[in-house]
Length: 401
Image 1 (cartoon, rainbow, N blue to C red):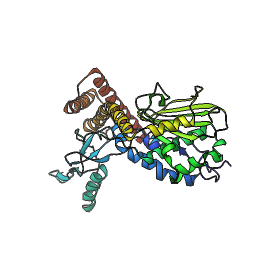
Image 2 (image 1 turned 90 degrees about the vertical axis):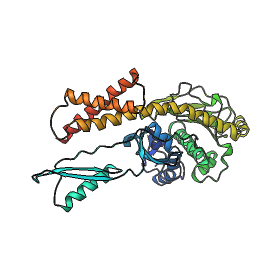
Image 3 (image 1 turned 180 degrees about the vertical axis):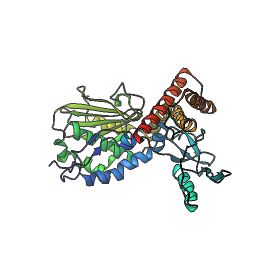
Image 4 (image 1 turned 135 degrees about the vertical axis):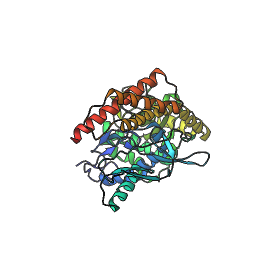
């Protein structure tokens, strides 16, 4: 069996996401890392990377593979108010008030219970607890989520520290192992990279850094929020360099080796975290003629002020994308909510034109309350959201029958 690239123990089929799925990565390999290292590095680096970008992932509604978008996160506004914020930016004050109302029929044959709580599960538990105490059973239930539109301001800082640099170096190293040099990465020339990734004992200042130069972005046609990994091996300069760009805006260079004795080669992988779709996987022949000394000189010359300015500029370019995602998630949420309001989910009947009109009207009311201009693009989003909500409802009902 092949050895793990970190500890040399046999690889045991453990699936490793090269770009962590928590930030939208979809690319997996079961041939490079053992389960023990996968678990350890996942807990120490991948989770840390995801937590540092949790707010950005939330506002962009990042797709996490088969798990879909993440759940709400807690955020505190500048006025001290705590919010639960759903993917895309829909929010409501944390710990929303609870209420419970019972309306019984005059003849005692039944009635209706209305409960309001912070979560769907809590609402269901309130209703079931009331009925169980009295020996009753619900014949039908309808639970809808009501999220207020206002949400806290987008965080004005971009999180980046040594842990993020180690995590992105890990991405570059594993990309090298998967597509360029699976056997060569086991050589001693990469031991310092293994040590840096696993336990941070190596001095990382000359290994990984935010690269603010235009030429550091080796993907000129990069999408607005794509994650990309480009690995270049240069036989003449004996360097292996990984250029990792997160969210289309944060370029990090990692010098993986300065004693490379393999052939010159290059490779690129790119994924759109908004859709979870792989954008590109291809060989690269345009290997740059850059020496290890030149890379280190640039790393040393960078000041903390330059890095901070670059990250702040990147954040400003991401804010419009987050605003667009807010509109997308708003209309999707509103369409699902209005469908449950105007369609009897228990009845095996087609969704009529009156119900569709009422759903559309409710969605447009949500858009207007959010002070969103009804442009042709927004109107089309509403149409698609209503269509998708109805199709999803029809498919789900067919599966249940």
